[in-house]
Image (cartoon, rainbow, N blue to C red; front, side, top):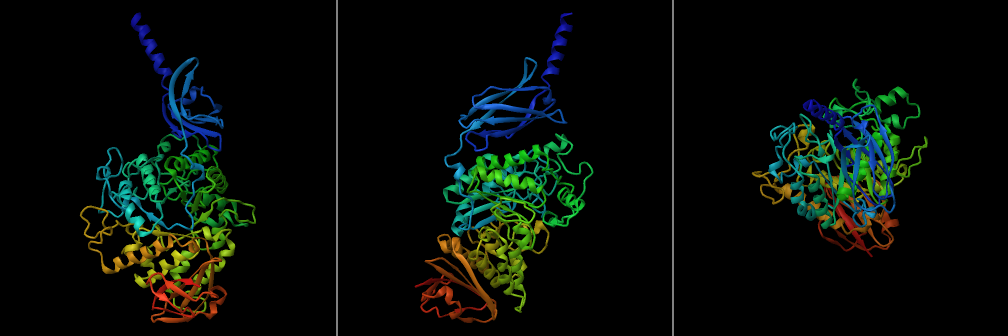
Length: 612
């Protein structure tokens, strides 16, 4: 009888304590945030069969929501303005019995965290695909239990680059004149194949262990801060990876769009602006999946929306970010995107967010920028957007023959569309990125054209971004992403070419490296480039002249596409240069004693600081 009673007690205990907490997200929060509301996603077997109890000064339990899946609870807390940092217990009870508990932490914010300054037009951003840059820690090349290991011979395989490698390379980036770093996604992508790119997240709160750790990610930003440099995080709200932990046990039936009957998106991004759009086409775009490996998340679900918004704030505060680049901007629910940008900027008013809207139409890109008046009344609050229209115009202008509306005129005409943007000066501009052929390849591997293009992007309005390897003439034969995102030479032990030391580099690559470094290091202190106005003049005879100027300074930039030198008489530009007599050419270092005319070498650019 005694044995039967004992067995009964054991079975009863097992039945009660089966509710074990497996996850609490966000894993911690901070005292002193402007928004007092915090929503916890709590996951554990049959956790909804418990009652939540919290007793901590300044923390009020507002609501506990049980959803379709009994393994989830959503717990809403209100944090008082004067709540203190500390640890408190979240108790999970059945009746009077505590069946599990979780110690939750409120951290103190770093001093000045809310006032951090985001990346801006004083910066030059270096874009890195982490797996392909530098392997700084070979011990994380293979991680036990993760689905994909090292395969450097495969263009879509894991090659071993990591956060430690980036940390080890920061002196090089600083010396080159870069002031900000944007990393393609570093969060966990525990997918069976082609996981190196990072765009199929399987854990929104964990750095992929093959890149390092959360702590190393934070260390990276600390090292950047020491150098006066900034960190931009790449986030994806539209989709997750098919191996994300919640895909095996989703909280609600509408957590993922078109699940389980996957439908691929029609990619008709203009449904967001089209006044004549059908609801069927709109839903096909925003609710469709990219590919079967990337489930399309439903941002109209308020719990998922809150989860994503808090996740972005968590990483900003935890790492100390100065910016976020948001992938596939027009694909998530646009109302949620508006809410997100607004909430993030409430916490960090000087922060910057840049969105990827891959359209060549400025009217479409401008729709999303903060301050834009849209006919449909839609408001978004992203300070920056990626300027794909200008990127395409520059690439075409340099390749095409000069004509009435071709060649350099294509740059002029595209910039004339700036009236459509509320803040064209805050657009992120770039010759290329990780999703397109390298600019060097786009211009036919013509170094002179590459230099002209880079010079333009570093001196026109906007925030320039350079893709890793542009500075050393990286190229590719294939057109697949895995080819474009090639390994950076010198990032792996045994590399025959080393871009960090110059060993094995061609003279042309070394020259390009020095060329970009000279302009970028000059640009660091060129306030007139950061904040000056832009005035340009209609291209003539294969040349294009523009100025950056303010009331005290002026810089003249001339692009010459001709195969011979051109001498430009400058009286046409008197409305800008009146009062200026001489100048200094930045790239060559030459003095120009009389700026009434300027000679520009064949297929080149000059940057002239004007002197009175």
